[in-house]
Amino acid sequence: MARPLRIQYPGAFYHVTCRGNERRRIFFDDDDRYRLVNLLMESLKIYRVILYAYVLMDNHFHLVLQTLRGNLSEFMRRFNICYTGWFNYHHNTCGHLYQGRYKALLVDADNYLLELSRYVHLNPVRVGKLRRRDYHERWQYVKGYPWSSLAGYVNAKRAVDFVEYDIMLEIVGGRRAYQRFLYDGVSEGLEDIFEDVQYQTILGDDDFVAVVKGEYLEKGSLREQPMYRGMVAKVIAPEVVVAYCAEALGIAIDKLKARSGDGVMRGIVADMLYKYSGITQRAIGGLLGGIEYTAVNMLRCRLQKKINDPEINSRYVRVERRLQRLCEL
Image (cartoon, rainbow, N blue to C red):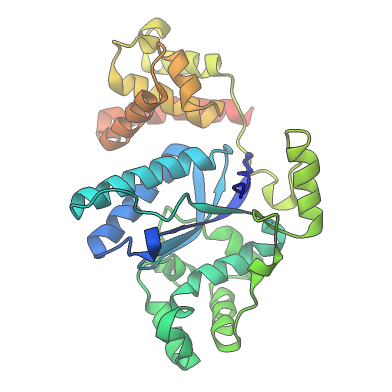
């Protein structure tokens, strides 16, 4: 049986799930959960992905996210490989952690994003014995569940900076309205929105599917839908990004491109090329002396580990501000 096609484009929304191999646990303790959340935060920043909702269960997790660069596969590859490596090392195991590759549904955000967030946030009370309990008890349980993004949706003081809350809250009318929306889902039950999945990979109505097929699958591009408008990042030519980096860092372009150059400075260039040129890490490697894409990923990961150093952070911010101003022109 053929695997469902991965549909990727700038601004796309997805519902992503990963399940443990043979439905086994992918979290044994809170150390595992903290590690996955930290890796998620790192990967969101590296790949310019926006997270709208998440929940961690014992043997799987759900993410609702948007890719500004059409790079879901790269994002998930890095995220899953890093966590699998941590899990196997931490628990002295080996082999596959997940049951095959991750499952990703392309989402018609205008019609399904809000309902999808409710499905994700209520997942802890839709499984096992909890689903048979009184709805008041289930509501109290889900409100106190520590491993989801729900807390920040119902209480502004518990919001975190790696989750984007505004779109959902604007749609429903604020935090109190969102809380009522979830409470109704617990007390009245939820419709199965996944009955509307088409072609195994698209959660959307017929109009959305027609757009995806006609504008993306057939022509290679996708007309923006209302929810996407203004969300897709402007692309700057790679040579312009390199030139701006060199000027802001006070380093000659040939030194930034040389394999023997300063790793931190080259990491900044690699990160800016990925963020503002929208090219792959393989293409970035070609610009930085013909290095492999894995070496590019390593440059960017090492940079993230050092980004809190005041001097490095100052240089990074200086470069990014110049490129942001260029995007606004």
